[in-house]
Structure formats: C-alpha cells, structure tokens
Length: 577
Image (tube, rainbow, N blue to C red):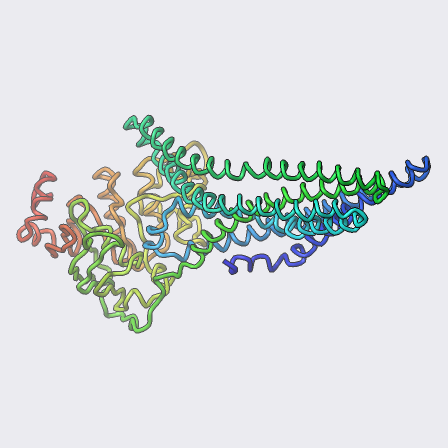
C-alpha cells in the first residue's frame, strides 16, 4: 500500500507546510485561555478597562492570524490531497489498461468502477484530513493537558481530573473504532454489489423495459441496497455512540473540575482567571478528541479503500511477452493454430479442444458453428486477448506470446461481436483504428464498410456526433462503423466477429465484395452463424461444442460435414445457398 503514496512526492512541500501551519494555529489556540485568564485576573479584578481593551484587541489579532494560518494550511493540504488523488487515479487507470482479459473478467467492471471513483475519493479525503489534523489534534490535546497541569499546579485535584478523564476518553474512542472498523470494510465490498446492479441496469435499460422487468429489478436493487444499508446502519450506530459517550465523560469531568477549581479559588490556591483557563483547556481537549476520533474513522475507511486500490495495483500483468517465440517468416502462414486447447478460468470444461488450422497470407478463413461452439473464443486467441491453455497460436510463423501487445495488435484489425463505439464524432471513432488518419482515408474506409450514407442533418458526415455506444445509430450503422475503424489501419489480418449480423443480404454482399477488392490484401477471418457469409471463403472451419468437425471449402464441407450441411439446409437453400 505504501506504493500508492509515491504520488505525494510531487507535493512534499505542500504536505509539510499544511501540518506546519496547523501547528502554528494550535499554538495560538493554546494561548487564548491564558489571555482570557489575564483579562479576568488583572483587567476585571483591578477595574482596568484599558487593559481589558488591549487584551481583547490581542485576542482579535490572534484570531485573525489563526484564521490566516488555518486557511493557508487548508490550501496546502487540499492541493496535496487533490494532486495525490489525480496521480493515483491516473496510475490506476493506466494499470487497468495493462490487465489481460482474464484478469478483467476475474475482477469485474463494477469493482473497477468503484475503485476508480468512490475508493479514490475516500483516500483523497483521508489524506486531506490527515495533513490537517494528524499532528494538530494530538498536539492540542497534550498541549492543553500540559498547560492545565501548569496552571493548576497549586490545586492537584484539578490535575487529577485531567489525568483520569483523558485516558478514559481515549479508551472509549478506540474501543468504538475497533468495533466499527470491520463493518466499514465490509460495507465497501457490499457497495460493489450495488454498483454492479446499477451498471448492468443502465447498460441494459432497453432490454429491461422491453421485457417489463422494472419491478423485479427494483426489488433486486432494493434488496442489495438494504443489505448495504444494514451494514452501514450497524456501523453508524456504533460510531454514533462516540459523541454521546465522550460528551458524558467530558461533562462529568467539567463538573468535577469546576467543583475542585471552586474549592481552589476559595482556598486561594487558584485565581478566577486560572479557573476559567482550566475550563477552556478541558473544552479544547473535548473538541480535539472528537476531531481525532472522526479523523481515525475517516482514515480507517481510507485505509480500507487504499488496500482495495493497492490490490489492483499489485496485480501483475499475466500476458507479458515470452522469449523463444521465433522470428517472423514471410513464407509462413499468416495464421496457424497447432493443437490448441482453451479453458476459461473457473469453467467446468474446455471451450476449445484440439484446434489445428492454417491460413495463407491474403486468404479468407470462415469460422461457422452454432451458438456457444467457440467461434469468438477462437478469434480472441489470435490477437492474444487470451492465452491458449495448451498448443500454439502463431502469426507469420511466430508464437503470439512472443510479441509485445502493441506489435501484435498493430498487425490486426479486430471487429468484436459486441459493438463498442465512443462518444464523439464519426471521425473520432474511426480514428481509433489509426490516430493520424486523414479525412480521405477515413472516407475510403467508410466506403469499403458501406457506411458513407449516414445522414443526420446537414453538414460533413465525419462531424456527425455519435452517442455513447452509438445509441443514435442503427444496429447496421454501428457494425459498419466498427468495420471502417478496423479497415482504416490497413491491417495484415482482419478479424470480423459476427460483424454483419445486422446487415441485410444485399448490403452484406456489397461489403464482402469491397473487402475482397482491398488493395493491401489482408488475411481475413470471418466469423458468422450464416453460411452465406462464409461460403466464398478459401477455407471454412466448422465448430461444434469447441471442436473442429470440418475444415474445407463450402462444396467440400457440404458433402462431407453433417453439421455444416444441417446449417446450410436450415438456412433455406442447401448447397446452392
């Protein structure tokens, strides 16, 4: 967890000046009871109005200087805390970008969102309060005790009140905190469940309403929120005991203090001003103990959040390049799989078994099969989104595990099954494929993807605003825009994972013709459930329950592969599809 605080290095001066100015403020605060005592013992006792006025002016000046110290300390503390959280959030985001798909699957999106937002904010609050109060509150408490012992030295009974009440207060505070800390930690983990439910409902709002599941989802969310609130209520009740108990103890101490101080005044051991000073010091101790208790509660929450963030930061990327993968060979197949098996983490069985295939450069490979047969899983092994459990995946004769991530994926244009577009213009979205693409290159990629006809009012098509996930576009437009994004980078390998499912047959046929006519001749991998989408491929792999039950051309497979023949026949047309 200490690694997180490396982000405070740039704000070391602020982290020092913030507490320092707070100590200056505390020194002035400890001096106030002495000035008030002097007013009572000298000014009021002697009827010296001028002295009282001078001391009041001194109090005003001390208050103004203390306020200046406080504001300065607040500024430095806030700047350090906000700068720290900004650096931490940036590092956390960068770390998430290095995690592999299996790691992201294991951690979960809701958890990462909570870490990036709520947890980082809580750590920021903890750092801010720590810089402001960690030194100040103990300094005032112990300083007030010392001053009280010095002022009440002639009346030992008053010192005894401080000597007994302060340890009792500390015991009560820390017992309450020890009881509350586990509950605060547990409530943070239950917050992940609530965040996950909100995230899934917002992303699936259309489906939720289409199936009239609002009531059931409201009930599920209410149950999760109730589960979270129960934990927070219990933690709140325990921490809620803090103020009543401390006030009871401190007020009992004040009553005893006033009793013993009054006796000291009657006996002449104490002056009236000293009695007032002792009362003020007791009040200061109460206030600072409450602040310190709240600080500890906040810091406890912050430490729990920091540990959760640290757990993400400590995740080691599990898909680093390995040595011994060989060199690229211009004569080798563009894609080759050698007896590949794959199993998802936590799955009961293998998603792929014994897959072997080879695709020549510039050829077109079709992958077809029923739902859940492993088509998308096979495609995800080529850009190394996942590592094969056993066997080898090679690109240009080189094991994909030996490539650096950017080197491998720079050769591949990947169109995922689930369309992902980002808020911005059409130009911005296509440039994800090639950041320096010119408008001419973007328009050419869109022409190939058959999406040049987008019209949303007057003006340049490239300047049309795209909503989050392309919600303001049709399903076919979203798919074709992602194809343009992949084509604009002119990849060596183009993987189309069920990327034409929303297109009509005429548009899909035009898209296939445009892809076949590309001048840079990429190796194309087409994944589909429709036989018409793969029939013109140089070779077709038929998957069934994770196994390749047939590899060949359309005509060969229709004659020899029962699974493929059933797919063709079920789609009306048989061999002539």
